[in-house]
Length: 451
Ligand SMILES: Cc1cc2nc3c(=O)[nH]c(=O)nc-3n(C[C@H](O)[C@H](O)[C@H](O)COP(=O)(O)OP(=O)(O)OC[C@H]3O[C@@H](n4cnc5c(N)ncnc54)[C@H](O)[C@@H]3O)c2cc1C
Ligand SMILES: NC(=O)c1ccc[n+]([C@@H]2O[C@H](COP(=O)([O-])OP(=O)(O)OC[C@H]3O[C@@H](n4cnc5c(N)ncnc54)[C@H](OP(=O)(O)O)[C@@H]3O)[C@@H](O)[C@H]2O)c1
Image (cartoon, rainbow, N blue to C red; front, side, top):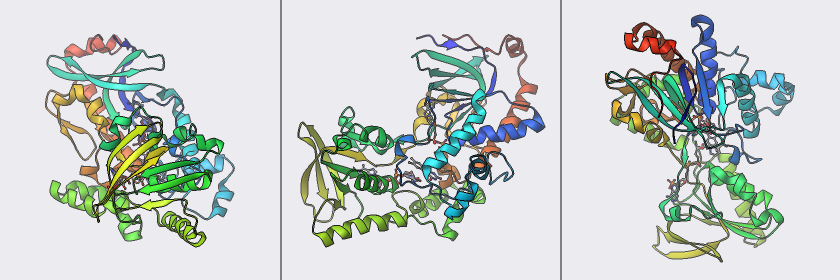
């Protein structure tokens, strides 16, 4: 298919318009007062933006202080703060009365939508970015072409000098479930609400549901199934020996400070890895303590009543899964005893976390110019001398910038660092564009025809 080329001449295209790129849009707007506006566009595949929308169960709370919103850490007087959102919506006093730093995720989702709503002119929704191609001139990559598919299935191409890839994680599907991709009874937690809405338990039918995994998503799915569907029996199936608490104690929490990013980045690779592993239990395969206590309470009350509804199957490795009309049969091996058992479920929730690989797919056509996706301190992907364009990444730099990278923790500071780097790059580009390229720019910036 030949992409339809839109006659744009953009300085930057943000791929994905979740928290990372919304924060960047704010930072660019702030800097535009001083330096003049960069021509920017943010593309998101969701037609109607929601923040991990299929996971917004009633009980789910933000796992970080609301003060770590899109902007306050850098500019507490910004109109885009969570406090101003509350004020504008007439809930500031009520929120204060709640006495919490942790709003429910539904409210934070509404806050993000409210901020994004201020940037509608720079946003295009319902467009799935497929790839980023090089625009070549004299053997150099002088610009980039971002190819997306719109809601009507048409391919669209846009020219830009730089891209910021902020597309988030991709659901991790364990190998024993990979062959059940098309089976509506087996789904990742990222699709939880949408898929649960089609299950028979919505109409009160009894169901047996397995949750695979022992992280925050698994715990939240368990509570939701327990609270919302009295006819549902849940088996929590995890490789570990127990649900473990997320370490959010104050000294440890300093690993999520902006200064810690510098510390991690300055280390040799092996030391960065050691630091990240040391603090793995602040974020991965862990659950908020209050949720663990609630789940323990539910299992304890089962013991008191003698009515066993749910089961807790720890130290279990999934060996295989098979689908039939009777359900999904899962074979588990007990890693302590070696025993093998098979259980049949009506549905399976894979709360098995996320992978961070999408940047490789999107940037594959320019990968030969990039230095193995290594990034500089300013999150710009290192490239060889032929690459005159710029690629930045947010959410794919944990290995170099630390555990904050996939979270909300340092968004405002990171956004400013990238925005400043973009301005610096745009300035250099304006001064340094090769002669051959300039006349084309005057014709609408299409450095190369599409096809
Ligand atoms: C259920 C859940 C709850 C979380 N809660 C917290 C929390 O409380 N605190 C915290 O600090 N972190 C939390 N996180 C971590 C989370 O990664 C960050 O909060 C935040 O969402 C990261 O923002 P982002 O913009 O980088 O990525 P995302 O929020 O994932 O946004 C990526 C955006 O890119 C779009 N997109 C993806 N692919 C394409 C494409 N090819 N073309 C166009 N658009 C595309 C998506 O539609 C999406 O809107 C949570 C994660 C999950 C999964
Ligand atoms: N309320 C909220 O704010 C909220 C809600 C949900 C999620 N989150 C955030 O989202 C991020 C991801 O959390 P998450 O719970 O989705 O993922 P996670 O923390 O990465 O946990 C994934 C779980 O799946 C298990 N797992 C992975 N691969 C497996 C396999 N092949 N077979 C069996 N089990 C497997 C892991 O087991 P092992 O431990 O054995 O590896 C782990 O228990 C975190 O940052 C979390 O804080 C936040």
